[in-house]
Length: 119
Image 1 (cartoon, rainbow, N blue to C red):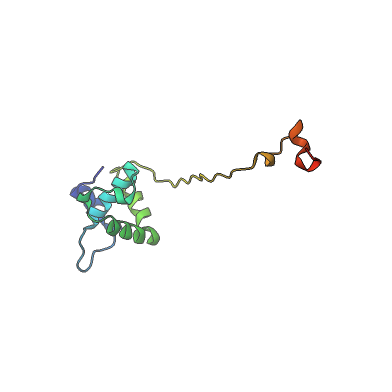
Image 2 (cartoon, rainbow, N blue to C red):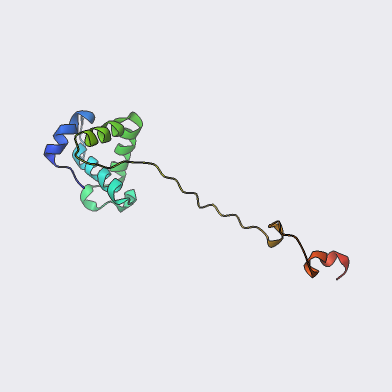
């Protein structure tokens, strides 16, 4: 999903004013952020039409730390331009292999005696 110029003008007061020589406008960066949020892709997976992914990520990171992103998404939802909810989800895929003898099962049969008994 991308927002148009008219929709952008409704929320541009939430974004910092651009100064100096910038390669991407705030609208382009915002559309790239919405693309990542909507498609769930990695930053490196952004299509080339949005520009350099690192530039977009750096600006989004700055905006996130300063509270700009919270204000922008709140305004986007208030104006009913987009209806998405951003939540953080974390999955842990840690796996620990345990030796068969360390599983806690009772030892029965010839394996319980072991080699220390002379067998």
